[in-house]
View 1: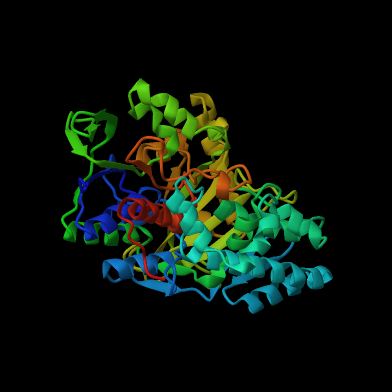
View 2: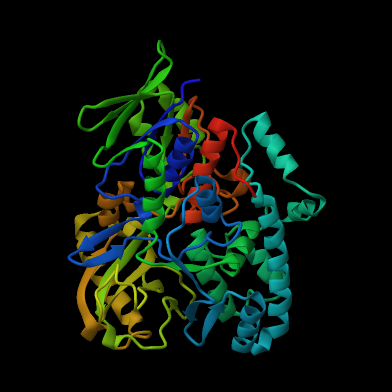
Amino acid sequence: MDHSVIVVGGGIGGLTAAALLGSEGFRVQILEASREWGGCSGKFQRGNVVYPVGATLGMGFETGGIHQRIFSYLGIIPPPHLPLEQVMDVHLPHVSLTFHRDRETHVNELKKAFPEIANQIDYYFKEVYKVAKEIRHLMGAMPILPPQTVKEWKELILSLRPESMTLIPSLNKNMLHLLKKYSLHTHLSFKHFIDGQLIDSMQVVSDQCSLLLGCLALDIYHEGAFYLEGGLFHIAYSLLDAAESEGVKASLGRKVVGIDRDDQNHQWMVFDHRGNEYRANHVICNLPVQTLEPLFPSKYVPKIKRYLQGKDSKAVWGTMSLYILLKEEVIPQSLPLFSQLCTSSRGNMTEGDHLFLSLSHPEDRQRAPEGFRTLTVSTHTKLDNWNTKEKYDSYKSLLLQKMLTAIESAIPSIREGIVEIFPGAPKAWERFTGRPGGIVGGFPQTKEHAMFNSLSHRTPLRNIWVCGDSVFPGAGTIGVSVSGYHVFHSITGKKLSL
């Protein structure tokens, strides 16, 4: 067996696969188009200030979490991470509350916020946590979905236990079904709270969100939520260091423009924009699946189209993000590191009506000098709103002001405290991450895109693999890390310990 691998894309999924393969003696070359590692979990720097570009809230570092397991397998120390007992504050139009890591405390907080439905909330979360516990047990062995080979089916079946059968009736149901079961769907404020949690993790609200994955999303912060000093890009750099220590070669500024097969030598050829050619037995594409077709000659296109059948690119979100350096003095002392602002009285979850705020720790000198803090703010946006030059410039300005106005509810003097601000609209994301149109977050976890209807890391092209947020299990550093592990497992047969 040829132990050579090319990884296209230096996001966390690709770096996970590269580091794991390198630890097993594979000859690996990573090619990253940009000048920064980490993809959507990367960073950019302005002077002595560092801004994380995307994901900011850390998960998976608890005992048994995916990052803890991968770092343990590689024999490396994880980056410093501060556990959060109070995960975030959530501000709805008529009530504010705190999301607590402890399940009982969290449910009691919700019952106090919504006393008129306290009993229903109790029963609702008992079922949510019961379902989530069973899914976590099932996913502990990290089976591959959807199974494509006899081995993958066997591993999935062996991961089941009698209690797993209780999940089957919920496979084709959505989270709205569970809200209706406990007559909570008509309580707009509580549903607004649930939708706010789901849109950030599942990219979709309760009306369409897969019930099984939605329960897992509502439970996941209780397993562990963390602040990473500096930012989540340290996950990428830790993986990169581990990979390079095993002889993995890693190159920035190498945009891959073509992939073709040398059938005579049984190798894949990868070409970058500088005219360099790389050869390997395996190619791992840590890319949005929407970018695959243009990379391959036309003879491979029918297979790629079949692989992507039913995956509507219009379902994917873009984001508008603000990167702000603030004077410490304008930040209320009670403001936590993470907050959700849900401002729409109608429960709208996009375009500045739902914001996620990530504030740097007051002692985090990696991100800002003393007396200053960085603030990253993001909202979901439909890419159709940005598809012309005229729309783009006016909408960017409009949305910027709408977002600042919303932030004033949490930081009243924010405009007086802004030292610098960098709006990150979809084209900025496209330039920074190479994602077409600025798409982020993978496919929404609806019944049509989740679980058995998700995309496998295994493509129809032999030894062409995909990892990242487009394939199972989806977005977030946990999801992309699992997809990177799946590629490693499929190539080597090796498993992470439980």
